[in-house]
View 1 (spheres, rainbow, N blue to C red):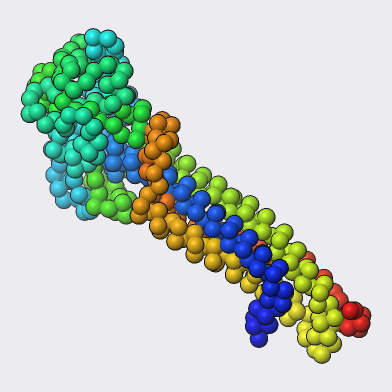
View 2: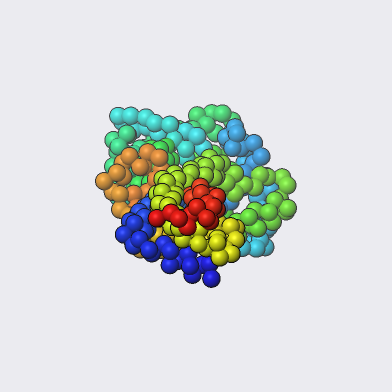
Length: 404
């Protein structure tokens, strides 16, 4: 009864109500779409980092990530391999030898991280082979092939089939140098990664280290992102002689920024709703002033003040939610449209790559953000109606009836 009456009341002044509803539609639509773009941008950045280098889970020597010494290889690799074969939700894994060294060309030098890999196994874990812009991903089937990033190629001023000399220390701290021929040049979403990371074949590095095969890192892919925690916990329960970390542990700044981003976007939506609060409050207050005589008659014939209060609150909620729900639906459809097609920001690619962000964004907005939005909308509408509702219930029926 009160709900039907409240709905009819908000349409007494159609023009005023429509203006407020349209404002709510535009505001909520803009907020939802903007939030979707921001979250999509960050989620795409995280996914790119996982595909580029992090993988879902990595296993290291307990001190390797802190000191990065050549001698800090993973102990008892064969035992870990047996455990991985039995692990639930494990899709693929690959083993890497990682060295810190220097890449030199006839005109320049640069510090690099050298990843010695099995190219076929690495394809199952990272997407580097898909990022080749010149040449092939170890396609020449020759010894001492190297794949380098586009940024490093520019710095060293080398191109396809050029020679690059890699220098690094062996197990006895002796300097080892060898020439490698560029078989491919890749370009990822991260300029820093492209300028500091090179890939060579594990066998080529093993021969330079005296036919010693070292495994500094085992990168693992789960069957899906939903199973990462389960797989990580299983491996930690089985492996106590090496360090098992998921991508959150490997890049804690991602998780921190993600949590902060959700808070920031909720504040952003709160600002939009705070602006709408004044419009709703003003509209409801004007409606109350126009119906003083009516309220007096309702109270005179027995309507309780708490029901009058509830009716005005309902009017405010219906007014804001009418525009808010439509705006949310339009925002959702906008996000769904661009989540499949992507938003191409190629014009800003160079600037975005400095932060490891891809040029094509895929907006998305998780369910909990919609729930937060509706809670904030209900709170906004309720707060906006309190002052007009208090004004109405304080009326004296005898005086209100004589008001024209």
